[in-house]
Amino acid sequence: MQIFHNRFPGPDPNDCPEKIKKEEAESLKCNNWKTPDSYGNYRKAQLSQIKLHWWWKMNYVMDGIIVRYNITAQLLLLEEDHMVTPDIFYVLQKITEMKHTMDNPDNYVISLGLFSRNYNFYQRDIFKIGVQTFYGKHNTGIVLDYGQWKAWSKCANMFCTYDDYNWDWSLIHMSYDCLPNKLTALYAKSPRVLHIGDCGVHTHKCSSQTSANKVKYVDSLSPCLN
Figure 1 (cartoon, rainbow, N blue to C red):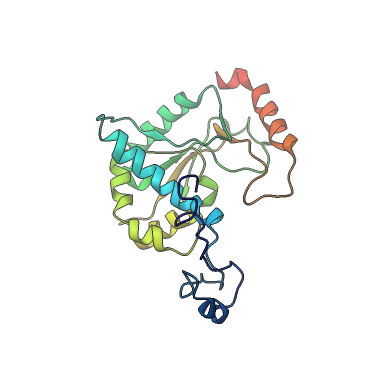
Figure 2 (figure 1 turned 30 degrees about the horizontal axis):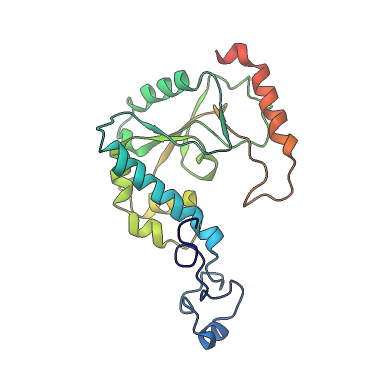
């Protein structure tokens, strides 16, 4: 949106208003009047850019950097409101070793940032690894290699046309309906990537102190994490 101020994928001046009936949109002859979403709403650039930016980022990094410089390492996806624990690379190494013992390791997505509303059992689960069908709560701190990305990129059409602006739900849909086998998450039950951005697109009733308090608690366990 920063680059394309007045045209797709940014907001075009002739875009249909988000909340308008299709008949009204047709009479306006706005750009996308023929294609409301499943709920009858029209594209809102601020939301749809979430998935578009994620897919562009993956293409740019994987095919523009990883390939160009012959990098064979795995890619850990972090965002600006993520914080990592001191032992993250050790835990990643251990989960990677476990992944390579599995049949069809490319079916497994490492997740270092399991979503949790609280960390009451953080210390209890600190050495535990979970195995579960990949879904939304595994979308933080995911790790993949180039081979996995190439398999995903073959499903680009399904990913991009699936009627949801969330990249993780689009990935889940792709997992079930395009990839040879559905994705399975290998995840640290005590997350090593902490999401510290309480207020955002999906959350409006929030407090800046909630995540800070969670991080303080995890930090108090630092002897266990080094």
